[in-house]
Image 1: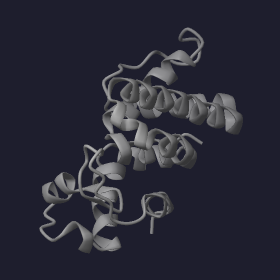
Image 2: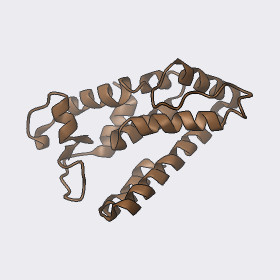
Image 3: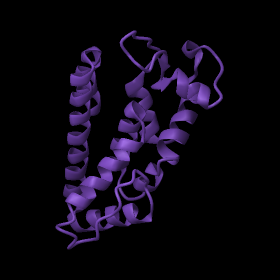
Length: 177
């Protein structure tokens, strides 16, 4: 079992269908659209933990490359995966790449990487060098930096769509920690 996915399932909990949530019917953090795209045809209330686990692991852990990140840093991988479940994997990947570029001391420690939202060999190498250079403190700072980006994202989408005020407190409390 993957402790990151287990943790996300605990955070996400059970079925919801808030009219202000653009995701609509959701169970275990899986929207109905995502469930259908992954072959689930049942009522969202009936989705099992095992079915949700499989979707989460495939779409928000393996496909975006966070499994590769976990081989370097579990905290960074958890932060990226948790954000991806809530907003999709592209933005967390972009945030990681942007922060790695900002933290490389004007390319003294490693070259800037392309900010394209895809975790590839250059992103992995940059993260390895950053963690080797800064250690656990750097890992903590990187997670905090990712949280800064995530919090700014939530503020922006709430200012653009007042209905998100129903959710922002919980997003900050549960996701930006």
